[in-house]
Picture 1 (tube, one colour):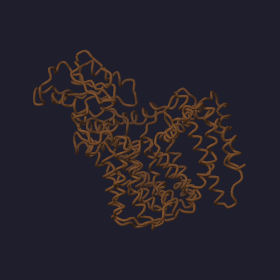
Picture 2: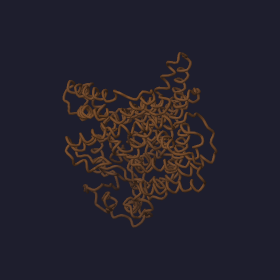
Picture 3: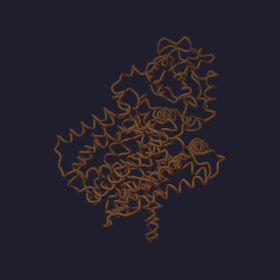
Picture 4: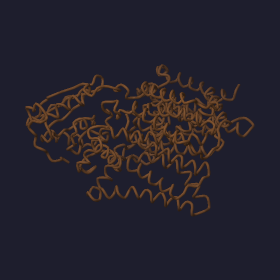
Length: 640
């Protein structure tokens, strides 16, 4: 009997112990320790045993054992939570969700030998097909092709583009509304409340200044970031394939871009993860040069690393995990090299770069007397509002909760974004099969740190996972190892762009609004009513900003201008107070009417299957003027 089939009983025990461990069914630390011991013992036995004689084959076999077992554990856990908590079925086999769990677990265990053989074969193929390269000079036409691909892809995938009437994603609208308020002189966190970093809102303030009342400047920013991302994907993937395959790599580049930007993690465009993707790719390239290809980075390179890490810090600091993971091993190798000058120069460069970005940010808040608001909202509230356990819990329970949240987040990622799951699988197999084992170590540490930072809290959203597309170059290189050395013609490059556009039209998350007229959206329908009162004030009550501030070109006048994910206790009470005191001319509610004294329902609009909006007007401005040039309402001071 093959060794992989003999492992089935132990695999069954391992999966049981791991599920009990991660599902939190234990009630004390001895029970948790027992589940962990059972799982680790079984995993250790599974990944050992008789292997092939040659060192390379032995390494590939052991790596295949490990990656196949980990995949099965994730899948088993997803099935388990789907049965117990009523989650949506696993993406590739929803019919299995109806099976009893005691029946399903052995079926997954039986799949282990086949998955084990597949992973081992993939790793061995990458080990023999990969090429160790470093730097190459590419024709400028390659980069022009990448820019054209980015423009076409983001025209079709991002709802910020001119092919869409409006970006309906609430996060993107919040970014733009807060940027608008900052242009009007309001101070972030003190006068207007949102949770992300100040650099993100400063960028959207610039975008709103360039194109008021639209997402056009945001789309141009996305195109720049997309073009840079595709260029860096090409550059990194080219390091792992023979130069003869670079034209073929160029042919696949738009397809890779279409897969990234049509994934569910992309949402509708303008996420922090999307804007930071070229930063992650650039830093990954620097880390590969330093750690894998033994090309020592200059002081200027480390300065740029610090500069970019500070940009991420003051945009969304949970994404710093990718920075920590990417540069953990390169910096560690410098610390242990025996030459004290190397780690000192790199750390000084990073600190100098961080200081250059951080100083203006802190100066802005110090100048406006809002430094306390910065640390309270951006750091303290973001950490406590997404707490993993109760504040009274022990440190052991908190750490266990963090570990459980990270595992649940990664397993949810595998289910939610099929494309990303395949990318990480191919990239992981390629790294394990690459002749230099440092690549697998770098990838593993990067994934571990980024998963810890992103999923340490109990909240998870699909767009959180978009940052992991920084490892797309490894998946792309893995595909190229199987392909023959072909030199595509010009017509092939055109067909590749056409295929990418077709993929975007079919798979983009926001494709339902492609080429839809503005007049069909409630945001523009209700804006006509609101604009009948010039200089009106508006409040989005009990829901996130859906774009009404943008379509009406109204500056938010209230600190809590909409409902956010943080769910602060005072947020709902303050919004109710704004209405009770009659501070706003109009307020909007979503799906549920909210009549209030002194206000009258004047209009409503529905987007079928999405939302029904109710618009209430202050009785003091009724009856509404017939057009925008009529009586002007008295302006109100900003209510904090």
